[in-house]
Length: 261
Image 1 (cartoon, rainbow, N blue to C red):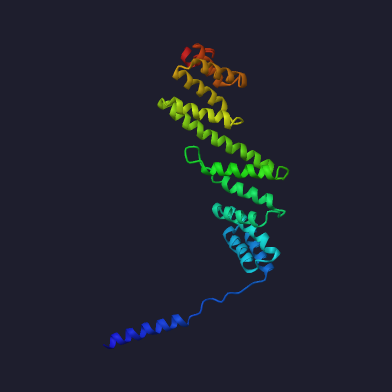
Image 2: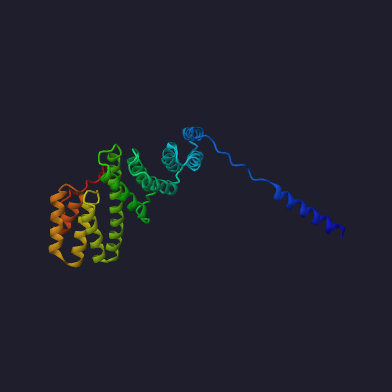
């Protein structure tokens, strides 16, 4: 009985102590102090801390001129800490709230980069690649004269090449499996939609292969002719020519010297 009362009293004392304990008092700091502290963290590459502090600037001083700057800087901090989803959310909000801000082009650029950094290899889903392409295209269309447009165009070419590579991978698979109609659709997509990419010569050659496999020789010859006209010196054209004509035009490789003796 004594033990029970002792335990009961101890529990009651703990509950009372818990109820009387106060949470840490919220302290509002001057906006310049918070912003400069966030900048210091950023300069020290403490990106997680800087993102938190920039968010705090806006939370404590939402109507100050510093709040708008802090929104963009928080997004940059998230980007630098590889928290791309958080960066995108912050940038979406910045773009929505401040469409005429002087740094709006940079916000679009940083959002495009946040998608671009998440591009995976062509064997995986290309949703992020497509989102990167859309966002980079939007930047170039809206701000063609900005200092970010030229780099966006380079990255846009790379995203298109990546997307074309995915189509080629699927097309080759269908070709190997004998699903020639499905393969043709993929190769045509590359030719029609990604005309400036490095994959077009191979796409024309594979299209020629697929037509030949289906016995559509006239289409195969036309496709090979297009390949020869646009890429006359490419290895893919030589492959197509040899396939269509049924003869070798590449010189035979010479025997290595160690096999001659």
